[in-house]
Length: 287
Ligand code: NDP
Image (cartoon, helix red, strand yellow):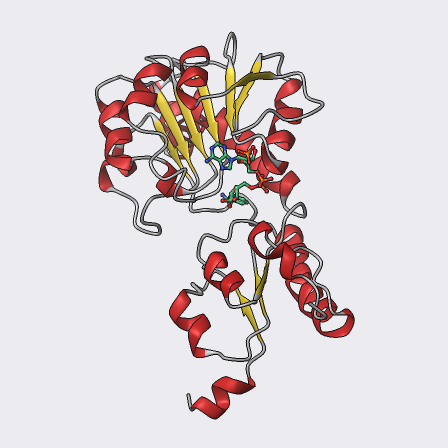
């Protein structure tokens, strides 16, 4: 693309496409990057801020869908439902008799939510109906909730047996769930990840699942997706989803509409609707 053409570009709508510092630097008149999804780890928002470029994302409109999927993934993992259904479809119920009892259950579980943000709180609301104690860890306590707060992930992992990860993928959360955290979770431990793949040290998780350090895992996101390690694919105590937590027509349409609304609002009213925290201070065309 010629320098003249690049100078024409004032906005990027990014649907899971990486927008790195090099791309931002190529576009001298870029004003806004409107990103699809609440997680924007594929956009260099800090570099955008340095260049006075606003980055927007699509928070809130997907909370219910992601929370529903998280609860489904948790139940599927704990009660081994995928393999039970496969057993029926393979006609083994009729030929071999009842499916084996699940070694795990939701009874007497204690939940720990790593990241009690918009989605974490929506998950907690649903799980409150399961009569399970709910703990959480984030960098600061959340006002107005009566779940048990832990100031470190390690403290929470020790106190719970079911760890639900719904934090963003950042430098600070990279491999936050490592061999030490999995050991603290313990042999009844169930790990659910709907946040971002790199938050978990994947080789450490595979070892922990193989040697019984924890009991099971349910994963919607992966460290190098769409590549999923063969070891995970063949383990029976693992439920795997191809990053579909928000992937219904309704919710993806709402996310797409917010991408467009942010662009329209920026160019028509001089202010985007849902800027990321890194660029919120730039959210005025009259800045
Ligand atoms: P929020 O910003 O509302 O919540 C993020 C939570 O994580 C907050 O509670 C925050 O608390 C906590 N957090 C952030 N950094 C850290 C840290 N270093 N240590 C401890 N806690 C931390 O985001 P959402 O709930 O809207 O979304 C969360 C993430 O879920 C997204 O960023 C995305 O990666 C993922 N996601 C995945 C989807 C999927 O398809 N699987 C779909 C949608 C979202 P505090 O700041 O106090 O630490």
